[in-house]
Image: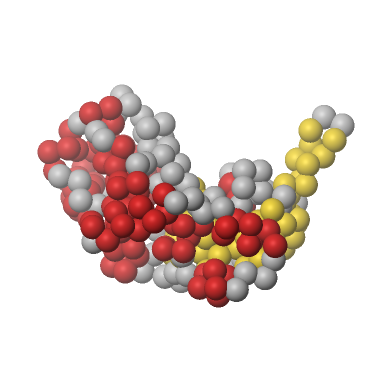
Length: 260
């Protein structure tokens, strides 16, 4: 994303949600967007996914400027980018079976036989460690971790190149967070996925990200290699965020070690 700006009108006033924000998600890597509520993280994600249009700047995917494509070409390009929502309790239709939830994107984007769709669904469910017998159940019959695995499976069914993960572990308890993060790292290694990881949790960023952009009020405060940023943050705001990492981060790291 290059020079992304976005302003929202609020009656007679205007909110500058993003001000010339640039960052790159390298192939097969994890880039984190970090900032407090209202920093512009989710607006950036919505622009990347095509849910919002930027006032200025470019969204370039595999060398293609997404803003200069036909509607159908944009639709096909967007299938390369899939979204995993923050709350697995709210993002899944409680009336559908897990099979139907995971299958739905295939029906929207591809013309496949029922047998082929079933094979694809069962394959991706196995990849995220969902037992076959769970596919006939509904979300209300699952734990929070299982629901998030369903959300990840649904995102993977179209074989995307990029996953946008918006606070994808924040609604889970510490032990389940560690399990889901381990799953995401495993999937990245197996499939060569790129992740845009949106979070306010720097403890998670330190564990999973390769690079990071720190946002504040729609502007880039600092960006670069995650190890460099934690070792020698250049800006006072970044130092404040790092200093505010709660003690629960040590328990998260311990839980990850125990589940590795």
